[in-house]
Image (cartoon, rainbow, N blue to C red; front, side, top):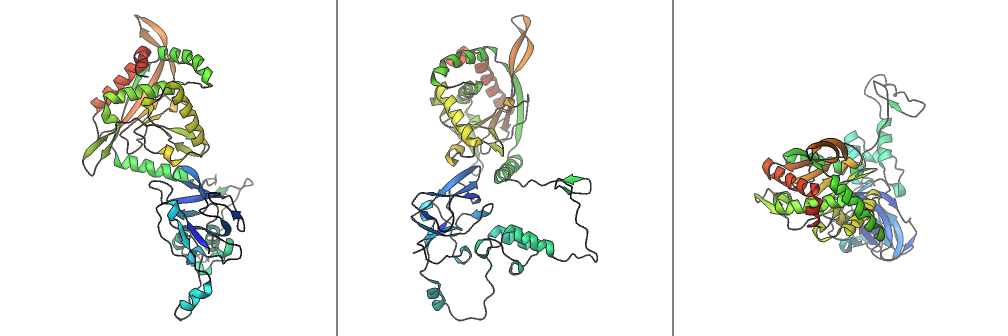
Length: 422
């Protein structure tokens, strides 16, 4: 009997995904747990495995299209069985991969026999919700659209094409915008081109709006002399080479952050507005903001306080590589208690980092500078690290934030003190 496999809930708070590419095609035979499709959801690209063995009878969603949790993703059965349409199937929200299946009746004739006689039925339209919404927004009647998708499915391009063919309300149709030889369109000022927002970019945009309109962010800045720490890092790399690991300043910074958070736990917390309380986290999972070709991703290094420098460096390399190739799991994006944004690796001195809710603080790290400073009664060139701390003023005051920053600076400026907490 054919099986409707519905898009499962792949992670906390995930409601929809976008099909990146199918790894199978209709008519293919698959085995249990064989990857079927890559779906971009939240900030990761995940593979959805087959729930059972069988033949791919119908792929309900095409590449580039969106799908909601609980909607039919694919129909799996035996060769020769009927191909069910996702539009005619009941849709229910599912809680896990195991629940994301629905048995199909054996034949359409049985369903037809049980259906009471009625007047002429309206033509059935195959289109996913986002395409239907687009049609409503553009005033396009879907029954009048010529479908070009598989099995008569109406695609987004079909709706846009139909909208472009409607007669203009003006007596004289407006001329089409000129096109340059390079294929660019024009607005009233000059040539332009369009770049659609990716699912990741849309997720980032929504997170930034939420942070900006929910929290009360304040940023304090300072500098720390890390000349001795840089020298310690260089000496440590000689020993780390035995483990095929290169240690940057970031693992040292992470250890110093944890040491400072232990003395100032209000910054390792989240704000519970419903209960009017702070949730102080007694674990230290640090998010590391990572630049990727499609936008910012924040993998989380778990239990930083319990790991040595080599392990931290190894975890950082692994997670940042997974983030940049969009293969990171949702588990590695969850559970952060405090975030570090090392924008200085690209450039920049001070910034106002945006909070990564529900966390109440984030540390921005600028680029290393060679600056003349007063040291030991003389003006000498030292290595200076700029720091920017953004905190949620609802959760704590500036004095507490600056005390935390002072503590962090003390650890970074004095490697001997830092070594005691590594």
